[in-house]
Image 1 (spheres, rainbow, N blue to C red):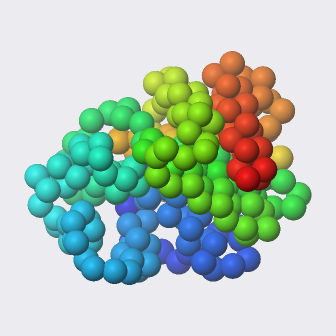
Image 2 (spheres, one colour):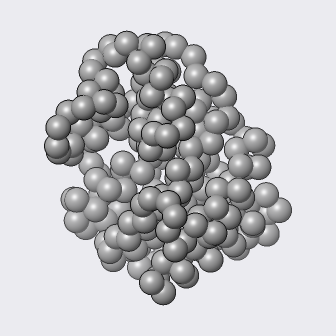
Length: 211
């Protein structure tokens, strides 16, 4: 998927700042990161925010597993956007969207061990750093995601709007693009490859809400 610059932060939530958080889960709109950046402009952000950034510098950021997963995803995306190759199927994160009559619940889990949850009401929960109280549940989501990434491939068009009511969408941040699968919740829960991920995500959600 190509990076999209200058796009408005439309989204499923009433609050603009919540829509920004939601859109940034997917890392396909790098301008949002630049527009909402605060603090000293140091590496890796100085490279990521540079037009036509040096390929070697981007590659170093993308391959460094000590970097935040979203930083690495932005770097891989920048490499592909500039016409350079990226290794296939390196998993970096999972975004799960569940559309209900009340609105959209969205959970993001990243390979660096972080997690974020946006309730349909707009309430946001953020988990960062390791260790944290949710390590086991986050690891279960990561491990359940990897077989799906191995089984499918990247989406080569613009990211779709949020799923229709009653549907669940599983989106994966991968070195060579966004991968996703979508369907009615009751159907997806019966799919052998999707069911373990939905169960793991549900366990994490319960823990997050309890805490």
